[in-house]
Image (tube, rainbow, N blue to C red; front, side, top):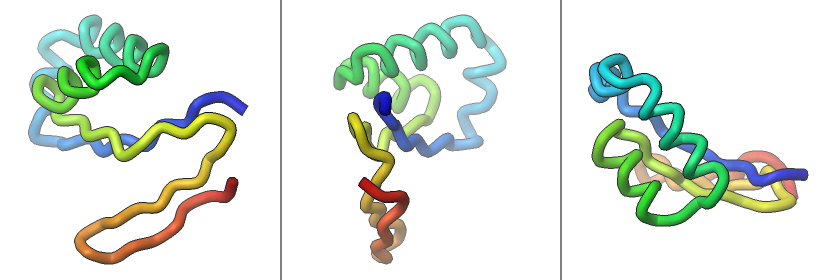
Length: 75
């Protein structure tokens, strides 16, 4: 199983994706290939995308959403 990443897209940043879709795709691909914090910060600041987590060999996530916790997927 490959890496699994859970991301939140802020719709208020849709204009930035529309303005430069090629950079958006390059940045997403860069993150998915490296998962480094610098690229995650670029996604957050430029495109409003928050990375909840990336897991290798698992699709399980623990999510804390508005103070309510839930488990998604399985290991």
